[in-house]
Amino acid sequence: MKNIYKPTILALDFDGVICNGMREYFQTAKKAYKIIWSQNINYNFDHLFKVFSELRPIIETGWEMPVLLRAIILNYNAVDIESKWDLVCTEILDKDSLQKEELMLILDEVRDCFINLHLDYWLNLHDFYPEVIRKLPKLLNSKTQLYIVTTKEGRFVQQLLESRGIQFPRNKILGKELKQAKQKVLRQILINYKEKPQNLWFVEDLLKTLITAQNEEDLRGIKLFLADWGYNTIKIRSLAKKKKDIYLLSLNKFSKNFSTWIDS
Image (cartoon, rainbow, N blue to C red; front, side, top):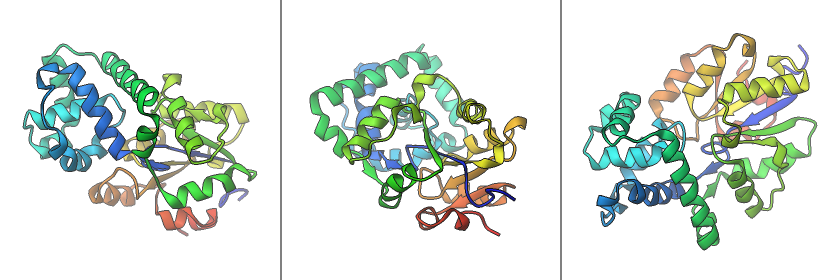
């Protein structure tokens, strides 16, 4: 029964768990869009923010953000975007002969330019969840090994945390630069610490990612938590409740002791 209510290792997603970067996503997606689809360079995007925000939960990695804007501008049905996003995304890429690697590069270049020219503005586009940001220093000073596992570039994550006065060890921010899926990153963490899966807890706001990890035979036993404050919907949270060994986590529970995280 050792550590059943306390992880040896805690892995947190960044976007949608630690940080709400919705405003930054939209601005970055808009700038990237203008590079990719230059014929719409003078388009007024601002009225799209609401629908973009509502559909954000379908996005798994950042390069999809300008594609989502493209789908909205092309008047794809919101229901189709939400239920058939992989097909919609592929259709848009194929139509314009685009590769995801190309979009990833453009998005990172846009962010780098944003940071270099307008750092304060870029930082201020991010909103941190108060309950999480307050707990990070306590976790960093505890016996629990704390990691951030994210599809965002680790250098961007570090810069954002430093702007809030948090010195997070760079080697424990495992980002897109690793070019590995999250389940592979979690596996490597377990190998490095020679730990059993049940001693690693993982908090993520994308149910699909949790299910993928759950389906890996050697990762079975990891405690998986869906952050209900992140980029997910009521429908997704309802599905999570029906999934065996996936726990729905609230900000209130997150701010308390680990023993409250798992329903008895």
